[in-house]
Length: 391
Image (cartoon, rainbow, N blue to C red; front, side, top):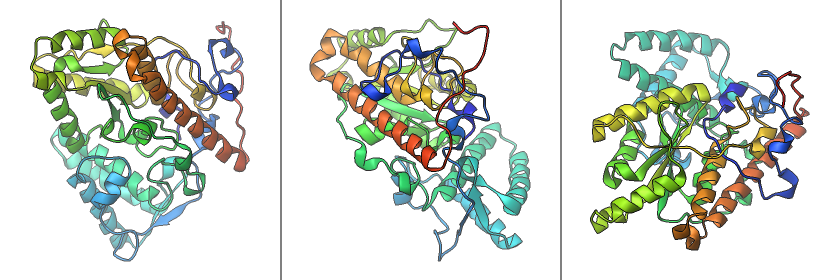
C-alpha cells in the first residue's frame, strides 16, 4: 500500500493499555515516519500475482448480496459496481486475457491492466455528468478490489486468510446513545491496514456502519439516518480551519439540550459520529461532499465538527502520518469514547470498557501485520528521520 494512504485526518491523545505496545509523545524522537517508499505498511499487503476468473465456473460473474454484505457493507449491491464487473468480464472475453491481481493493494496487473485502463478512461470521458463520473470512479475502485480480494482476504478482517485475526477480536456492545459512521474512501476499502473496519468487527454493523464515499446507495442510508436523528445529533470528526470545532462534551451537551424540546421519538435517536476514513489528501473532498449534502438536507452547509486532543497512537509504529498529532480511524473512535466517559451522564454506561475493546482489536491488528511482515522477511523498524526540526 502506498504510505500516503495511511495519512489520517483525526487527532486524539491516549496511551494504549497493552504494556508491550505503549506509545506516547515521549517517543517522538525515537520513531519518526519513514519515507514513502520504505514504510512497513507499504508492503504488508503485497502478494504474488493471482488470477481471478469472472465466469460461471469460477468466482461468479456477479457480486451477490451475501458476498457484498459479507465485506461489511449494509446497502444492496450497487448497480454500477455490478456493471463494472460485467464490463471487466466482457473485456476479458474480448481480448482473451485473464484478470491478474497482485502487488501493492492487490491491483490489476499485466496486459489486462493496460487494456482495461484504456477502456475505463474512455468510458469515464464519455460520461458528461460530473456526479456520474465520480460514481463511476468509486464503483470501479470497489469492483476491482472485490474481485482481487475474492478467496484471498478474509471478509471480516480484510487480512490474507493465513493471517486472519477474527478469532482474537472480542465483540462488545456499544452504548445505544451513540453510533459511528465510517465514511470510507474507495481506495481504503479492503485495505489490510485499514483500522475503521475494527469498529464494526467489535460493535457490529448497526452500531458502527460503513458508508462508501461515492456509492449513492450507502450515502442514502447514512443521510436518511441523519435526517431522522436531526442536525444536532450529527457530528463529524474533522479539524477544519474555517470552523470553530466543538469538543465531544459540546456535542453531547448540545444534543441533550435539544432533547428537552423535542418529542420522545427524537430523544431516543443516538448521537451520530462521522469518521472520515481516508487519506489526508482525500479527506478534503469527502468533507466537502458532506457539507454539500448537509446544505441540501438542512439548508446549512456547516456540518458540526468535533476536534479531539492531540497525540500519537500505537499504529505510528507501522504506518506513517503527516504529523504526530494525526492518527488512525480506530484511535479516533477510542478518543471519542474516552472523552464521553469523562462526562457525568455517561459514566454509568462503561464506555471506557468499550474503548478498551477497540484498543484490544487495534493491538491485535498491529500484531497480525507485524507477524506477517516478519514472516515475509521484511523489516518492522522505522528509520530515524534526521531533521533540524526534531524537537
